[in-house]
Amino acid sequence: MNEPQAPAMSPLFPETVAAKGAWRFVPLILLSLYLAGAIFHAATLPTGATGYQNAPDEAAHVAYIRSLSQGVMPTQANSAADPLGYEWHQPPLYYAIGTLFLPLGERGLRGLSILCGVLTLLVIYRTARLLKPDDPDFAIVAMGVAALIPTHLAVTSAVNNDSLLELCCSVVLYLLLIAFRSGLNLWRAVWIGVLIGLAVLTKVSGILLVPVAVFACLLMRLHGETGKSIWRGIGGSLAGFLVVSSWWFARNQLVYGSPLPLSQFNAAFAGTVQAQTLVDQLGGWNAYWLYCTANVFRSFWAVYTTTEGTAYGIPRFLELQVYLLFAFVAVGVGIGMTRLHFQRKTEFTPMQQHFLWVLFAFFVLISGAFAAFLTKYYQVQGRYLFPAMLPISFVVALGWRAILPKDYRGLGSAFLLILLGATSLILLRYIAYA
Image (tube, rainbow, N blue to C red; front, side):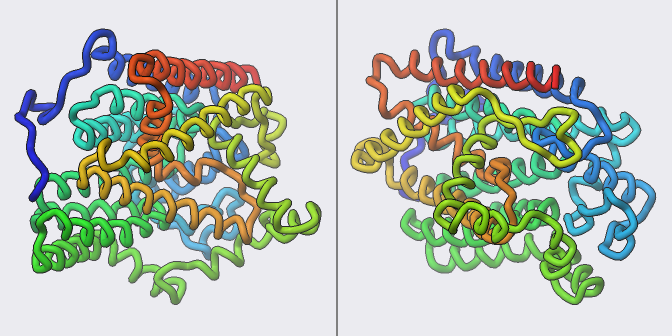
């Protein structure tokens, strides 16, 4: 490999420069804040409902876990009579793990998602430290963004498979970074494939990691990997992926006549609000996309549902001024990333640039799949972007800090984290009294 290696400084975070001053304690504080908020949300949100935007389809996910605990794998046929059986199409990994938490009750089941959320934050922090070992503040801000986005905090403290998918995706990206830094040996390649397989067994959208991993392997050719090692790595990853997940595709082929029951899913969800209905109401596709963008943006940051609105899953939002602040942050991040693009040769090593390409590729694929879904169904839920939380948190941290003078980056970073934390408190207050 061509990348220089810095000397190790600790067994937990090697090849890094330690954070200085008060920033040393911030990761633990952020983790504590996330845990406090997640536990509060899990403890206060009523159970047995499925229409909460801050706990989407939770009752249906619980029904899947209960079915597995009784030895029954949900299918379209055996779930047709159950009004909560509509998650039959989901892969079983999250729910199989959930059966271990079932004796703790429905609120206890939420602990699985919180655990996944904690592990994801640690993976994000660790990956950021490896990517930019001389900039510990970047890792802190990236971790803080993921910990304190209000909707993200809420969704990862409810029963759903999004939290485990996000964890699997983050670990795959972490392993790819290790391969960039230390080489794509067969052992690493197999583990990358295994984790992609686990992601697919959690949620079908995990399949988007496959082209991302191939893209990353090809980029490693620019960092000293031989063509032989690249193909060996792709083969090892494919083997790991198939060993873990091939049984699921075979089972679907036997039950539904297809490796993925997409046609059955479309038929079952024909009653969901169709995109064309909104297009007709709004006067065209341009108006529809503007409407979707506005609502996805708001629901990504902060959304909830009152008890009265759960029957129809009606979203409720915070005051407009909150979203204007986040729009200001988003614009700042965009300007900062544009600045970094033109300064990339001085700000990043080639390895760092290429790994950022991998992160962008994954975000584009997740966003593209979401956009394709929106062309058929009106489902403006920002949580569909959360599998790419690691890339999102990295971009926000990089872009936001890039627009600030160096002497004020600490203060500006603190402002961003305080804004997110305050908004999370506001959302939790609304949820508690909804």
